[in-house]
Image 1 (spheres, rainbow, N blue to C red):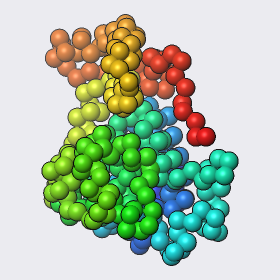
Image 2 (cartoon, one colour):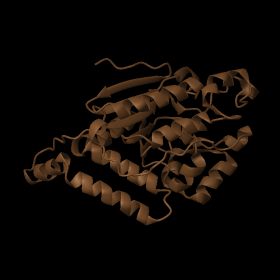
Image 3 (cartoon, rainbow, N blue to C red):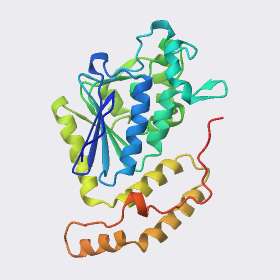
Image 4 (cartoon, rainbow, N blue to C red):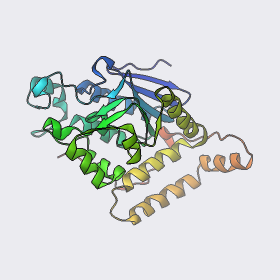
Length: 294
């Protein structure tokens, strides 16, 4: 099956693994309104495609993403300037929705696990877009920076929700207060990334991890697991998790996947899970309403 094409991304699916590559290498993969739209569309695609079990996202060339494209100079972040017109569809009332936030909220809702293979410089939205990825692996040559205060703006992409949950409030505040660019080793030490790899080893390592997930786990179980862990990160009480867990276990326990998971284990063979995310994902969130931007 031919894969769709995007203006700012490369997209390929092979053996259950979708690879999304930010593809503006001549601009260090700088973020634009078009990239925002492409990223939202590509995650709609991965969710709908049962052939996709895991998503890897990386960058073309020497950068992952150098932040917002600053080609408009001092008007870059001015939502009343001409280059903001492409964002008009995201305007609610008199407020232009932040493009990075629209991307990270879409990633947050992903039904497939997301592995970031951070191959180079990642600053501004180039680092905040990573925060809802489930696992981040980085090249030893990668650099990171929450540089917003040095550009006269503030953290975006819902990073004020995501970042402190990953690295703690003190580290989050230091990185955002100073706006300094820091090396991959510091990102590892503080828990922003899972592991560091030589540049040539990064994608193979990400694919090996994706392969372990794709070959051994039930896609519907993974989709539920992702929802449970991310949604419960902000829950007011563990009872909310207990209610969702209970509904999920009741549904999954009677599923073909559960029968296959136990049988394949006892028979010492690779599982072949029959259920599909597109048709068999149970609703374990009765009354759940997606928050609206108001």
